[in-house]
Length: 254
View 1 (cartoon, rainbow, N blue to C red):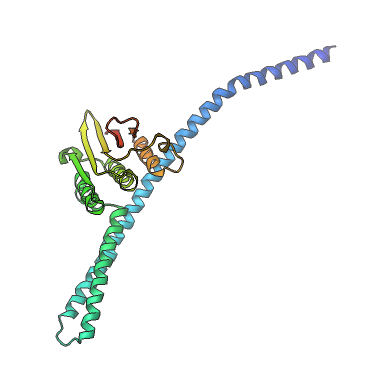
View 2 (view 1 turned 90 degrees about the vertical axis):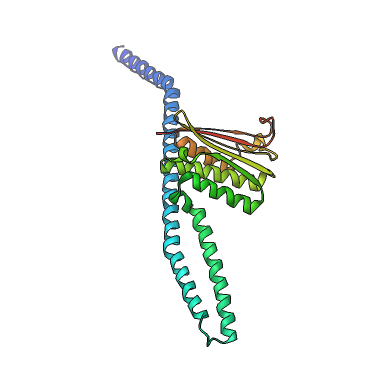
């Protein structure tokens, strides 16, 4: 009888432990999910930073090394073209080579700029946005206005890069999908926050497109903003009374 009593108490104690574990499991799982979510967010921010550093390194290598080499070759070719004893065929070949070198230099500058805008390092965010705006107008023929003050956009490199990439991705989406004729960009610094807005008069993004799994451009913008503890709001055709798409970002500045 005594053995049966001990066995029953043991089973009762084990059942009580299992019961407490079951009660604690939902909270523990929620905590684990929250920790995993924070870790993924930190990983995403670290990957963004690493990618930007790699882009900057490759862009500098292309601009400083390969760009200088092509420029030197063009100077040497120009000196050869000035020689009076060159035949007509040689002159034609050298002119063709010069055109190819010009195209190579132009392509190199475009690739390096896409990797890391030289203007961002040389002139800061304001100058980089002005350059991006002008290239957008020339390439796509879409009117684009920038409202910003240079004195307000002297920022830490992380914030300058994030703001530039958000505007760059927004303009890319507008050119591909919006069918817009006008774009407005405003960047202001106020109350310790960087306020950024990109608006167009196109057909507007559909609500279903906002959360598509393959919308990596929008996801990338969100991750950049969240990595800096900021807020982003994307309003499409049904949310905007004036149509088009409106992207609003607020970044707390250090």
